[in-house]
Every structure is written in C-alpha cells, then in structure tokens.
Amino acid sequence: MTTAALKTRTEIASTPPRWIPSNPQWATYVRAWTFMPNPTLLRALLNSTIITVSHTLLLLLACSLTGYVLAKYKFRGERLIFMWIVSQMMIPGFTGLIPMYLLMVWFGWINTYWALIIPGAFSAYSIFLMRQYIITIPNEILDAARLYGCSEFGLFWRMILPLSKPALSAIGLINFVWIWNDLLWPMLMIKNREWYTIQVALNGLFELRTSFDYMSLVAASITIATLPLVIFTIVTQKYLIKGFTGLSYTKR
Amino acid sequence: MKRSLVPYIFLIPFFLDLAIFSFYTLGFGIYMSFTDFNFATTGPITNAKFIGLANYIRAITDDPTFLNAIKNAFVYVLYEPVAITSGLIMAIVLNTAIKGRSVFRTIFFIPVVTSTVAISYVWTWLYDYTYGPLNYFLRTLGLPGQYWLTYPFDIFPGVVLPIVSVMIMSIWQYFGLNVVIFLAALQSIPNELHEAARMSGANAWSSFRHVTVPLVKPALLFCVLTATAGSLQVFTEVFMMTRGGPVDITMVPVLWMQTQAFEFNRFAYGASLAYTFFLIILAIALIEMRILRRGGMVYY
Image (cartoon, rainbow over all chains, first blue to last red; front, side, top):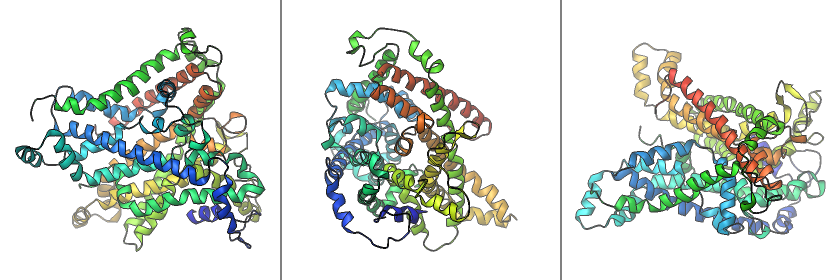
C-alpha cells in the first residue's frame, strides 16, 4: 500500500489511472515550484522550517528545565505540579483552542510567527518524559559538580543537558514532526498568505485536487512537500521511534 | 538538596506559561461560554451579555450537527482496534528473525510522519468515483464502483460510508506506529524468559500467552490511550477529505467547533461546544478507567 500511495503521488500524466505513466512529464516537478502563487512552495517550506525549528528548540529548553526541576529538586508543591502535568496530558488540546486564539488576538500575535512558537512550548508530555529521563541521572554527579563550584544553572546547562541527549533527541524529533504536520493551529493563526506553513499552503490547493488541469501539479507539489520529512525520518529514525514509544523501552 | 529558592526560580517560565496559557485561557474560556460573545453581533467582548447555560443547552438540544459530530467521533475511534491489532500482528511477524526488519519498519513508519494533508489528497484520488484506482479495481472484478466519500446513507445504523473511508485511510497511516511500538516492546522481552518458559514445558502458544502478552500489555495500553485521545480530536483527516462531508454528515466535533467559532464568529458558542465535548470524553474516560482497573490493567 505504501508503494501505491507513492505511485499515485508521482502521477504525472493526468489520465485514468495507470500505475506507470506512459508519457512522464518531468517538467511538472519544475513547474510545481512556482505554480503556487502565494506562498510559493519554497516560501511555504521555509516558513514551516523556521517555525518548527524555533518551536522545537524552545520546547526542548523549556521542558528540560521544568523536567529537571521536577526530577532533582524537592520542594513544596512538587507533587502537586507533577500531578497537574500528568493530568494535563489527559486534557485534549481543542478545549483551549478558542480562548487561546482570542488571547493571541489581544497579544497582537495573530499573523506573526510568535503565535506558532510560544504557546505550547511547555508540553506536558515532553515535560513528563524529560523528568522520567533525568531521574535516572545519578545525583552523585551533580553533587560532585556542585563541590567544584558549579552554579545551579550551570548544573543544568553543562551537566544535565549534555547527559540528556537521547531524551532530548527523541522528544525534539517527535515534536518536530508533530508541529511540521499540524494544520489546525497554523491555519487559524496565520491569515497572511505569505506566512502560510506548508500544510496550510497545501490546503489551499484543496479545490484543485480534482481538476484535471491542475491535478498533476498538485501531486507534484505534495510529493515535493513530503520529501523533506521522509528524508528526515529515515535519517533520524532511531531516535524518532524512541520518542514515539514514550522512551519507555530504553531501560528494560 | 538545598532548600532554596532555586527550584522556584527555574520554574518561573513554567509558572508563567501555566498562568497565562493554561489557567487564564481556561477561566476565560469558561466565562466566555456563559456569554453570547459573537464577534459579528456583539462586537468586542465587553458588549457580550451573560446568558448562563443557554449555550450549553443549545449545544445539546438544538444542534443536530453537533450531536452527529459526537457520534462520528466515537465511530471514528473504532478504527483503533483494527490499526492496533494489525500492528501487533505485523510486529510479531517482524519480531521473528526476518532479514530487513529495519527496512520494513521504516517503510511502515513513513506514513505515520507524512503529513496528513498530503495523504488525504492521495486518498481522495484513490477514492474517486470515476477515476480512482479503488473503483477501477472493483470494476475489473465485476463489482460496482462506490461513492466512497460522498455516499450519504448509513451503511450500519449510525455509520456513513465517508467516515469509514476516512477511517480506512487512518488505519493505513497509523498502522506503522503500532508496529513500531509493539516491535520495541517485543524486542525488549529478554529471550531468557521465553527459554525459561520452554524449559518449564510451555509450547509456543503458552509461551506467547503467558510471557509475551503480559509484557506487551503496557504497550497496548499506551497505544489504546494515545490513539483514543487522538481520534476523538480528529480534524485534519476529515477536513482534508470531506470538509465535514456532504451536508455535514461526516462532521466531527473539532471541525464543527472551528466552523462555529471561525466561520460564524460564534466564539462563545464554540467554546461551550468544546467544554461539552470535553465533559463527555471525561465521563467516558472515567468509566473506562473503572472498567480497566477491575481488569487489572491500570498502573497509576
């Protein structure tokens, strides 16, 4: 079935279905780059990249810091916060959709990248995973570092982060994929066509998907759009899969 | 551990985020759902009037599309068992000593991370009545082609064909996710356990039942929970395939919420829809937890 989808996606001649086009028009792939008026395919990919990378980095920073605190410090309210985070994982995302949108309006963040980067930086799931991982880092190392005069923040920055690379990679990758593929949130937040992410831009081709004249261009566009992520997946699959399995199979 | 302010200081960003993006939006959302805030009619929120439970009552009694949407969401959830079971079977198959296991794993996993938008386009073409390969295939077998995405009548009570078509696409897409998760679980079972079982006289089937199954249960739980959560909130699949279906028959809750709030500007009503659906989900989740606890499957 995978191959079926791939073949259909590379359908270049717009005729009744044949598995292998008899007269492949490779020029379609070239035209696909410029056929979308605004944003162009390239621009949309660029938008997506900027947003996704920024959001992922911010998320990693935020969640690792929070996870670290929950993992290594005892303080009043720790239990409560942890319970809250676990319960946040159960609350579906759509409940906050509308109020969040209004909040973005008031912040003036609608139509800017901020609305896509900042909210959601503290993902409960990611915080949870970071905490679970950081707990396994032996305290002795941290105490030793303290004896050597390491500051508390230095502990985090210089010891925990490097030691958490597996967790960071897994969480970073899974969030990267999730944000890249997200349609609803960017669609609502960005009104200006130039700033569309790749998913929203592809959605703009919705009416064209069944029109004979443009079907092949749409097919070429989505193939080009999907390619980066496919390559990304193949390259990073080991850590990516770790993230999807919730880091739960690293220890047994 | 020093008793100091350090943890609190490090948590400041988290608290900020919590205060602004969680608590405030929640509180404001709930308050708003009790008003008649509608961008088109009442202008800025300060003009909105407090109308109590009117939105909620309307959602339950006067909004057939919403009720249909909830029904569709629960129907959609049913794609899970198929995806999970087939994933498990494939994982078991792959767990035996097959060459190229990694390759298969990657191939199956690619649709999982491919954008649903792109996949929806592909499946729309697959499902096309006149030109789609699916109908082409059926016709060569002598069977009639189907209106996969537009057939407006129930094929089971309460289930329309378009939703099933979308479900089939989701099964295809997320099959690989289950394969990967179960494979990881299966591979983490040390062989010694199986050997010990063999030495105690278990055959292949017993070994499976008593060694494999209990150790795979956490993965199963994980898959079921994440899939359920995700499928009740389904949006992109339906939006990209049918936009809610011919005459709203494939409407799903998040899509309807989004339509009400952003196309009709009824923000307050949309919020009340969100919370109503959330309460329904919560109720069902609690019931589910209770049932699972009796069956000994819950760990927390």
